[in-house]
Each structure stands twice: as C-alpha cells, then as structure tokens.
Image (cartoon, rainbow, N blue to C red):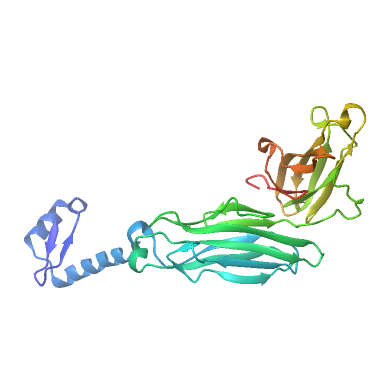
Amino acid sequence: MRIKSSVGRVVVPVAAAALPVAATAALALAPASASAVTSVTAARAGQVAAAPRPGGLLKGHESAQLTLDSVGAGVTVRIQGGGAGTSNCTNDETSKTVTTGSGPVQETISFDAKSSGSCAFEKSFSYFTVSVTGKNTSGIPYDSTTRVLFGQQAARQPYISTCEAGHDRRMSCRETSPRSLELRAFPTEVRAPGSPALTSTRSTIMNLSGVGAGPRVSIQGGGAGTSNCTNDETTTSFTAAGGLIVQVLGFDAKSSGSCAFESSYSQFRISVKGRAADGASFDSSANVEYGGSATLGYRASCGDPKYLHHMRCAVSGNQLYLNADPVAGW
C-alpha cells in the first residue's frame, strides 16, 4: 500500500499485512499529514543510510595483522608493499622497517583502496615482502624472507590475507584468520651449544621452533627398515626449555662389505608431546631423512609429507627447519 502526501510527491511503501484491517481502511480514506509523511520518510532514509553499499564493501583504508614469532632482540624486519606489477587500485601501501625486541613482532599491512575511475569496478590488492635479517643479541643470524598477499580476489569481494607459496626462504607462513597471518623465521647457520665439530657427510642440524617451555621432545634415529649402512644414529629425549631448539642429527656411515658401494641414510622420528608453560598442547611429529654417499654428498630431506603431523618442515642447505603447531582448541 502507498501513502501519498497532500503536500508533496513523497511516496512511502507500507506493508499492508503489518497493519490491522481497520487501520488500513482508515489510511485509505484519510490523506496523511505532512508531518506524518516526513517522519516515515526520515525513518526510511535512516535505514538506507545504515545499510552497506552494494556488495557490502567500502573502498577505503584496509589492513591485516602480521605476527612474527620471536627471533630475539636486535634483528631487522622490513615490510615492503606495492610496487610495479605487485598491486592494483591501491595507494599508500605499508613500507616500514623495525628492529625486534625480545618478544613477537606484531605489525599491520595496509593500503588505501582506490575507488576512482575503473577502480570502482576492479579488485584492490597488494603483495607485501617481509624480510628478517641480521644477528640477534645471542649471535644467531637470520636472512629470511617471504611474500604475502592482502586484498580482494574479485571486485566487491571481502579483503583477505594469504600466504604466497614459492616466495619463502627460511620462513614459514600460516593463515590464522581472514585478516591475520603468523610468520616464523629460521636462522641461517646455527650449531647446537657444546656439540662436536660437524662432519658434513655424517650429520645435519635440526632447528625446531614453536614449542615453548615444557613439552617433551624425542628424537629417534635408525631402526628396522628406516636406515641403511649406518650405526649410532642420534637418539635422545629432553624437556624443551623454551626458545629455538637446535640439535645435531647424525650417524656413522658404514664402509665395510657392501656398504662400500651403497648409500648411507637414516630416518629420524621427531616428536613433541605435552603442554607448554603458556597452556599450548602439543602432539606433533615428523619423519625426516638424512643420507647420501661420499661420492654424491649428503643431504637432508623433510621425508614423506604424510608423516608430518601438526608439524611443518623446510630444508635450506644442509639444515632442517621444523615448526611444531599446537593442537586445535588449546
């Protein structure tokens, strides 16, 4: 039903079903007063003003959260957004450099989404390169980088942040919410405190992060069907004390008998179990591999991905970089 004002051409739709029959008849017989029409019109205008624009999205300042796990104090973190071929319909992309303190680094990536011209109908997005470089106050060196994407996947779509595979070096990325990313950087060259000099053909280094203090870490090398031409594979177990865990994984490569002509290799079962001091609960594991020959050289491998359980793995040079993730719901 429509009410026509006697003082203007304002027409306001009213749902007849929402009114009693008597009231509907009365409205049909009596013209509405100017004040009544103005009041209804104002209410309707207020509803329109409160509603989102088409698609429910505005073109304006947009941001997402980046959290970099602690790498120790004194390391340089660089965030660079935008640039030729890496953004569309954006201005003022985040470009900054910070020096880390002792805890995690929390920063935002952002831009102003343009709405002028064709940008009113195009998606807005920007890539951001994140680099972690330098030594921390404990002398642990970093030279890590990754690239993330923040923006729309299509015009009028929500803004989301995503990890970009294939652009990371000694750094991992995890999407924790539509506008939140968690990054972890791994050091370049680290030796376990007090460890013996490394023999490149017999050992590799495992760098394990994300555990915190409290969980039990177990390393089991060798075993039936998991090694060949090796002895004395690394086997140890300890309680994590917090911070980065650095451990040598190695074995004695046998050269007697047929082993003189065969490759020496071993799998190492890495497990993290228990509750950390911050309440996080872990049940993480991985089967990594190390092996080769004196002729071809030795190398580390993350092994079969199906054996990664609440654990992420990357290889750089002759080192393994593992990150244990807590179980969901802790």
